[in-house]
Image (tube, rainbow over all chains, first blue to last red; front, side, top):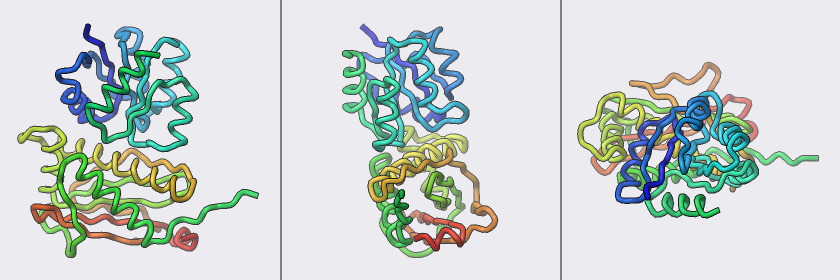
Length: 121
Length: 161
């Protein structure tokens, strides 16, 4: 069964790269949001299986957007997908309930592995 | 009393930034950048950002448009790319470079920095008033494209290096 992915990233290049990486997998991008505000507005409507969330975005950053989504939807499966990949970000993401953290640049193996782990919990 | 870790010396900061930039460029695009000499000489563009939270410097990557275009083609996996694609790809590429630099600086100093969303311009970026060049590093792409990484800092901050 296809798993539905919502991508939150201010760069549409990232959406294109994820589309390529997720080709021939069970994951399909069904929504793309350019910032945290859009993600908060979109989540209810889309109800994705997985959210990929960048951190550095205009307006509400990805950690704040993830925190708000998880407060309202504790069942949400959020995978941070960011270049800010160091201990402080990992701990902050873990503390708010984010399931996985994937550092940019990424490859198909790492992304799919992170999605699988996030969905298992 | 909290111990303040000094900013890395200019040579060390240049080495960290250069190594990350070369490594990310290879990972993202398979383009090889080697240390070189000279200035970008084609039509040039600049992608740049400012670091915050204990690392008060601005980093510019000035490069031949041909290098940014090839980077974009590799990132988007298509030959035809627009000027907007080049700008978007350059900003995303520099976002990954700067994320790697922040992670490396965290490992080196324990300070958790952040950086602003990268900006892009055609030609050279004029740094904010009061900033002075701290160091620069020049690279040569595998198709003879030139790139120059430049760090700017306020004079009072260089005293902390």
